[in-house]
Image (cartoon, rainbow, N blue to C red; front, side):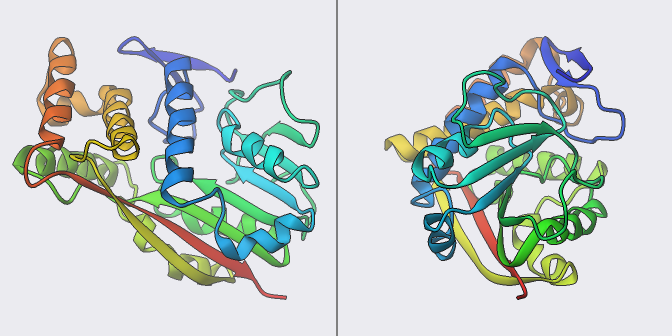
Length: 280
């Protein structure tokens, strides 16, 4: 694994020029696995419908910021004729147990990727909202455009903030958004990506917005409640000060946050897939 640092008992990457503020330990990898299958259920599949014909023909796929590789290995099983590559700046992906059509590389999308121009039919990335500064999004998308084949698709999945719920939930959501802004990040990139894609010469095809209802007791919405609580848990080193919650009281705060998400009027969390296509 890349150089790491321990904060509040959690392992974080220690890449000097990165602003990413979620952990890189086993608990975080477990969260990402659970999140993957919740997102797959919410959006009824791993990829937008428009991309399926390309995958069925046997495509070359790149997953940017692949983490533990769950999405990539899931796709590799569904589409064994495809060739899939996952990149991440942290070596958290599996090295031994993986499908034969998958490979993982250590790389950073903000630097020139180790691929020729026009290499991939489909490029995927998700939850870079905590990894990129505002000014880094155009850089990343221009590099994605470079490695996409003409006619290839780009899919980004990001979320909004917690803008619906009771006063406690709105307060927590507001603090989280403020910390992002103070770190030079865009809390609502999910809904502002279209113009940045156009600037990178990736034509926006659609923005598919879906809402999760964290107060509802069904399995899917409970999985998203678990996910958002664990995101707030994982970002503890950056939130204790702004929230005014001491480290020894943070577990108590998390329990209250989870409880309040279930209270009227019910907390909601919106996510969005932005799909774009490189010109032929």
